[in-house]
Length: 119
Image (tube, rainbow, N blue to C red; front, side, top):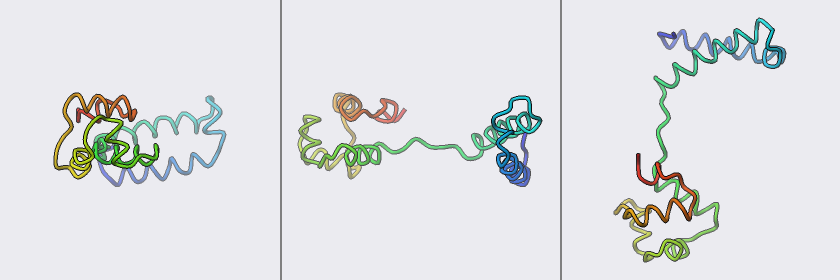
């Protein structure tokens, strides 16, 4: 278990050195392979507890998906069955989608329900 930021930094540096030898990545019998996997697990555990990744905000995910799908606010409103002003309110954080609209966002934009529902 990594206890300090200094220990973390040292292990990250060691992992970088181990990754330079492809044998440590590909050969499961190599000493470096075993060391690399153990250190990687320790670093991953430390990062999960000290640098948690937060779920993205729904507004940001909708904006990204709109760009990916080539949608403007008017087209998105048609797709979701709500007014363009309502879409504007969602995108500006002035209101939250109803459960029915949240389901439409999840299905029609392909956004995971846990992000849409903020779970």
